[in-house]
Amino acid sequence: MKSQISYDLSLPKLESTKANMLPPEAQKKMQCWIRSRHLICSGNFFIFETVDYSAVDRFSQCITALGGTVISVDQIDKIWMGDHRQVILYQAKASLHTPCHNLKQYWLKYGGFRTRFDGQA
Image (cartoon, rainbow, N blue to C red):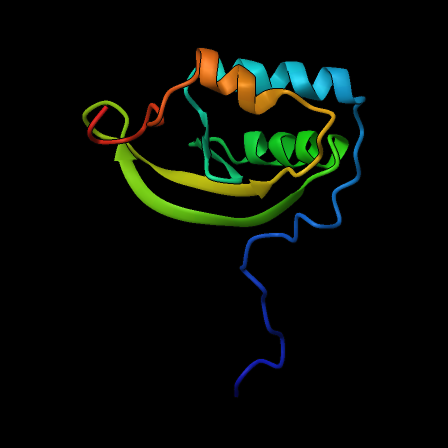
């Protein structure tokens, strides 16, 4: 007999995330991720890569607090941590089209064109 219960194992929706932080705090977190090469700017989008899914949630909160939207979150790769452990690499893509922030200029000054997880870095 087959079970009538279905399980939704997809990633949770990030659009319902509330902004729990103020914009100055969100901008400081984003600047930290730019300096550590977790966050890059590609065209009109900000791309965030991490192995920690809770960091993706914090990134979503920052983007929401600054007036932007998270477009997608994808599992793009599995990378080795040490000799015996693989972890999932997540990539979040966000759009931030508000003229009041200066994160793109900050990225031009302190950021890079590749993330720290890029194989060519």
